[in-house]
Image 1 (cartoon, rainbow, N blue to C red):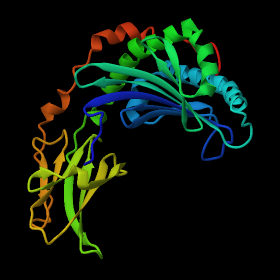
Image 2: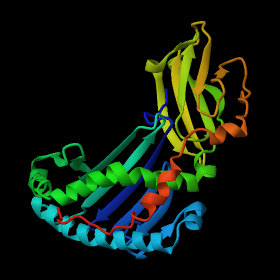
Image 3: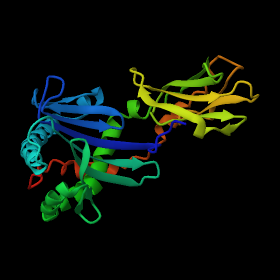
Image 4: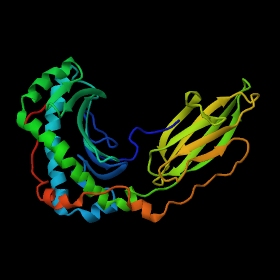
Length: 324
């Protein structure tokens, strides 16, 4: 089957990528903001500016917001420069290609619970993760222990990170979701097509291609006589289609001599009921009913009353006190 653990959830993510050997395709520093699966702004060290990546961000945020993002990007850039040098010396690898990746953000779940996190990695391996409950850092290896001790001692920074993740991040996310609700809250139902291919060993590979759906989260399973055969299936993962929707494939090998009924079972939040396409009986797509438009705007109860309170406070300019 194909599914996502973050079903019916909204997320805000900030990604930083810093490399020791930049190229035209990979700038020295890249800073990107995501709402759900949408890139909403991007900064890179070549252009030295933050650019909106969606019309609804460009239309709803003023110059103060973009100036603030540039301020942040340049402060982070200076911080990462020192940190990259420190890490190369720490691991005694001063030559060659090195990369720092940082991700932080928060999730707003369907039941209105929230989750926030901050994690650093070096050369594609975990380095440090922030534990906001204890306001300390979790080291992934011996090399990270030195930085952990230094960062644990920065009480103000750790209090500030906890406050951002628990008190500031979700209001940002709610605001962005309101800006882009026509895009982010749209529901596009999937279509499914079943095909087969014979192999030299006498088996038949069944393939179910599901495409054209949004949001990304979906469950696709092969059924044999109405029972899930998840353990026998192989998924190609969920991939963008290039038009703002997603697609996926799920395959399963069967012995065609064994008489059984096989069907591709699809569950998606745009569907009023699961979509089922049988193998060998119909080659036509079975299209689900359209959701009433009223359903599209009743999925999340936004707490907009608080926006005016935090909006005037959100531009406090702060950065970590110490490098890695």
